[in-house]
Image (tube, rainbow, N blue to C red):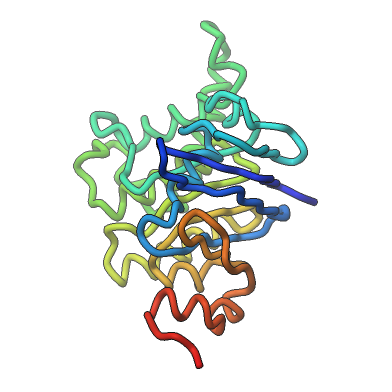
Amino acid sequence: MEALRIEGLSKNFGALDVLKDISLRVQKGEHVAVIGPNGAGKTTLLNVISGELPADAGKMHIFGQDITGMARYHRVHAGLARSFQVTRVFGSLTLLQNTLLAIQGMRPSRFQMYRSAFAYEKIIAKAEKLLQLLGLWEKKDELARTISYGEQRKIEIALSLSLEPKVLLLDEPSAGLDLGEVLDFIELIKDMAREKTLIFAAHDMDVVFGLADRVVVLYYGQFIADGTPEEIKANPKVREIYLGVRQK
């Protein structure tokens, strides 16, 4: 089943063509890495898919539903979640409050002023499960701004997953983490997003080859390669771009 379909997508900033008539199809449960040098258009692509920026041309569908002109919050309810390069947790709230807020925001009961105590129990139980998976339940009452950057990255992923997305977008998920944290982070995402459709932009090749079933290469706003991690490693054009070595 096709989870995401992009057709003829373009995005311009004045005279600068950042995305140029690109198309992409991602199957349900597939983990796709988008790689490319700085300025290739990776973050812009995720911004357009998530609704942070409007597309100038093209169409986008999630599980057959046209989201091209859809507001960002409507895309969330259509099954799309997103994390960013810079963490966006609420620093003045505790870890538990951050998690509860994200979970509650996706429920129809968010509009209900009065509800049974049992409804809150289910939300708290789900928040506890997420924080337990992250190994952060013991810190549930700490303010988000007081925990380490690596732990904040974990919380942001948890908040994205608490939205119960059909398609999860991650922008440089390992940014700011040291090698040990990166390896732990790869295992965490593999475990938590095992059955999710995942599209992520990354520079870190450990993350790319640790998570991706498939890799697409973006270069000056266009896809120039698409294949398995092994195929991309061996692709002469990709090696030329990354290593500056023209293959004979």
